[in-house]
Length: 137
Image (cartoon, rainbow, N blue to C red; front, side):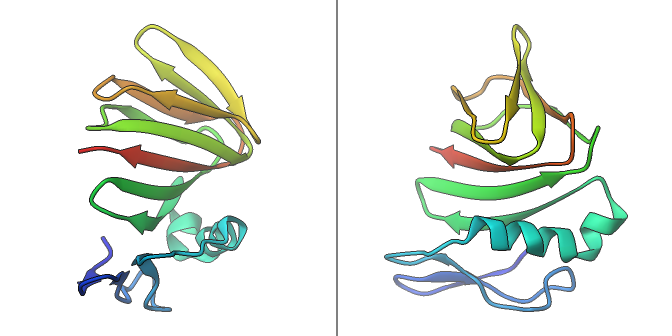
């Protein structure tokens, strides 16, 4: 897990063995994010090569967290709940996103939203990258 530095207005991470390149701004009055550069970073890391997924937190505040997630084909995020409202925007590939009652296929350029505390799961139908935004608790 990435370590974070705190000061009054800005929050950034520190280098870790998984991300030795070091500091990345997570919270500031304005945070600029290049999603496709982050996808390339995810794909270049050892975690991507050694496991079925990799992710990077790209923004974090008291109210919202944004995480870019990459899944290899057939990788799955097992059923879980989020303690806030989420959106999942697919930037590349195709996923199956499901709750206990409903499953939808979501592909590049599409987005789904889910109310808080609903059990859900994600399965990559192809190599996929998506932006998870969590708002709330």
